[in-house]
Image (cartoon, rainbow, N blue to C red; front, top):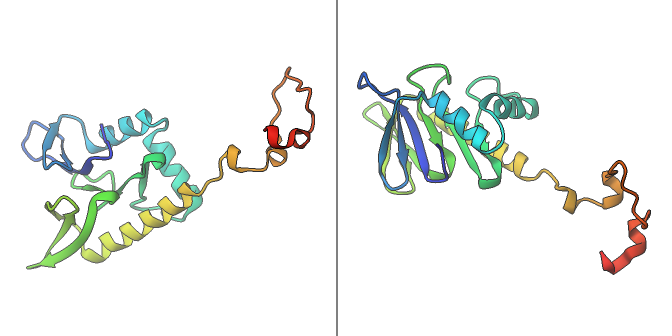
Length: 176
């Protein structure tokens, strides 16, 4: 499962495993599950599905390809794909751990905040655009108002069968 300590999910090319999960401590966990299965199960742990999270981002923005994935917006767990998510070679990078990217000898690397680096299979400009999209997505979904922050009269909350003796909550004043 993905947590705040996950830095990347890469394909495994050993003939046995489907993916390799890299964590902040530098550990690598090999899995027989695909990256998509790991991401979907993680989204479900955080009360949604991969498809539901992608649909929500696409509803808010016109990111039809390589859409950033908000696994858990409350904990700021967001991931970005380096290629089409259905491509076996796709690497998923977790935004909160990316410090910077670099290119050396025609190869692109992502450098993580834990000092580790990983060669990735896309250009620096692609990963920069993906990081920008993820930042916009994070900002958008972190500013959704909660019921407690809204004016109670605007929420129109009504509980069927429950009749409060205080029809106008403003009458309670500082008691609330």
